[in-house]
Image (cartoon, rainbow, N blue to C red; front, top):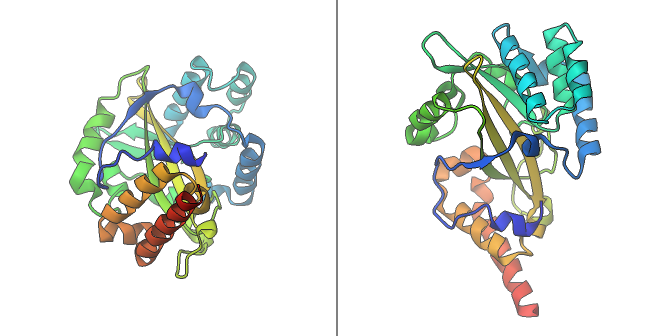
Length: 286
C-alpha cells in the first residue's frame, strides 16, 4: 500500500460507523500480494507455534469450509492442485489449517442457526487486530461486535439484514482502519504488543487497514468472511497531502470512546499535529 492509496480510502465525511460496500471478485481479493512469500511464511509460523490460538473449526463449520473450498476453486481462488490437495485431507481440522496456509487472507466461516441468524463457526485468523478467534466462536454478529462502542446501535441491525440477504456470485468489499504502534501483522491480544504512547514519532506509528470481503455460501446458507491487512507508517502517509487530509479528518471527528477502543485516544491530538506539521513542511519545500 502506498500513500496515494490511502487518500482514496477516506471520503471526507465525519467518522461514523456505516455500511459502505463495493463490489469485488473473490479471485482478486484472495490473489497473492506483493509480499506473498513473507506473508505465507509468517502464517505458517503462527499456525505451527499455536494452532489453537489461530484456527478453530466446529462441527457446524465443516460444511461451510467445504463449500468455501468448492467456491474458491470455481472462482479460481484455488488452483486445481491446491483444490485436490485439500480434498485429499480427510481430517476437517487439518483441511481448515491447510487452507489457512494457502491463502494470505484470514477467513472466518459464518453459519446459520435454526432461527436464521449467523454465528461464527470456524476459520483461520493469523493476523487479528486485537481480538481472539477462539473467544468469538459460537457467537452471533451482534455479540461479536458488542465490545465496539456504538457499532451495534448504529449498524448492528443493518449488518444482520445485509448478511442474511447476500446473493451468490457477488463479493462485497469494505474496510476498517486504525492507528497502531507496531507494524506486526499479528496483533493478537495475548502478544501484549507495544501501544501508542506519548511522545509519538510518525515513523513508529502505522495506519492499519483491514480489508474485508463477504461471500455468500448458498448451499449452507452461510457466509465466507475474508480479511486482509495492509499497513503503512504515518511517515509515509504524511508524504501525500490528500492522505493526510483524509486521515486527519477521520481522526479529528471520531468519537472519544471509539478512539479509546482503538487505542489512540491519548495521543490522537499529537498524531494530528504531527501529520499536519509534517505535511505543511513538505509543502513549503516544494
